[in-house]
Amino acid sequence: MTHQPGVQRDPAMALLDIYDSALPEVYGYLLPRCGARVLAEDLTAETFLAAVGASRRDGAREPTVGWLIGIARHKLVDHWRRAEREQRGLRVLSHERTEPDDPWDARLDGLLARQILAELAPHHRAALTLRYLDGLPVPEVAAALGRTVHASEALLVRARIAFRRAYESHTDVPDGGLR
Amino acid sequence: MTDPLDFLRTPAMPVAPDPQFAAALRARLERAFLDPKGPAMPIEISTAQTAQLRTLTPYLAVADARQAIEFYAAAFGAELRGEPYLMPDGRIGHAELAVRDCVLMLADESPESDHISPATRGGSVGSMLLQVPDVDAAVGAAVARGATLTRPVADYDHGRNGVVLDPFGYRWIISAAPAASAPAAPAGEPVKHGDVSYLTYEMPDSGLAREFYGAVLGWRFTPGRVPDGWNIEGTRPMSGLAGGRPAALSSVYEVADLDLALRAVREQGGDDSDPTDQPYGRIADCTDNQGVRFSLLETDPAAD
Image (cartoon, rainbow over all chains, first blue to last red; front, side):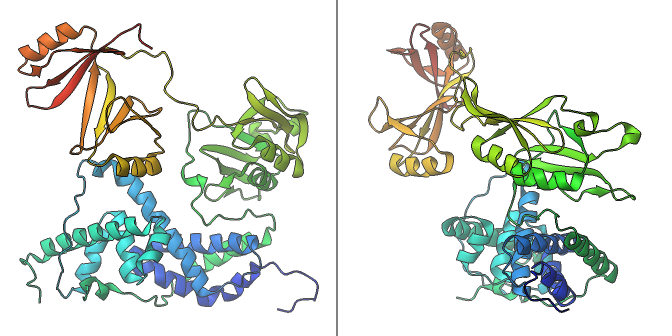
């Protein structure tokens, strides 16, 4: 595509140019984190549509895969936040207690670990996904979740405990005896 | 220290989605590009998530729904809630906008069901009242995008407001939203027998508690009558903070007749203490039949 000098091109058009190569990247980021195809497709669509609006708003930005994955991460966090709001009423009665975060020495089974992750409460799942699947440092987890670093650390501690408890109850092995 | 969860690290690996999905999404994006007036989709969490259907929801007929979506977005900060429903002939059959916490529905005119805009009928037929934090800014934005100013912004007894007629024929009274602090405890609503009339939050460190709840809940404190006691302003029920104690919440319940109530406490296996006279009424500390502490208050109706 050629452009006449002086004719301003819709900045969002650049997004269509990279659509074919960027789509599998964005979908490939979302799918293992959602664990469900339909949800991953919905969030992929939301991500690209949001990108249209965003590139119109702050025009100069040339869209990249990294930028799109950043938007996809927002969409994922928003999704978990909605899910958490729906479940909040149920969790009020089983108030979480923070217990000491004992060192945990285990080698995890990948399939089971993913199954456990999918069963956790959305806010725990969100924190663990950003911290471990994405490998973000805690301050970036905090920024993505819109919490303070201190609150995110506390949430991660509770999320790890919840994960470990669920994992150990599935493997049914007393402490630390995992192969 | 190794963390077994580090094992979960999942670098983003490209995965080709269902080709049908890929093609449909490409078509949606192309549509979004081809409509230069297409509303910008918000990435941030927006009011669209707090907006919900309330008891009454306006449903506007407009001569050009795409322009109307654009106008209400620019003038009133409205955001699309989901995809508009397109009719086979290209008209928008249904669109929902989030306007702060409310939903505004609109559609292109449909003469077949007599859903016709006021502009087409020949004039506005009523008004919408919109409350915004900044009246002048909202009226300015509406006029800048083609609304007609029919009553300039001014201060009235019931608040600052102005009136515009939008390009689709709707008349909007744009008025200042009540300040967040305004809906304080209504004065003069008396507590009844059995109500909680006062709560005391007992905390180990009142300084830390004031810092925390001040930041989280916006509570404001004034020094209270007792050492390390603090009034919490404007909450319902009336509340106070007492420092230097193990964390606990203690309630004062209102009773119509304190002496009768104290007799009932004893009859039901609780303990009572002698009432004391306070400027606001007579109060007695009690424990119930399980040892839980509480207080009973007979408010002095003459007290302020």
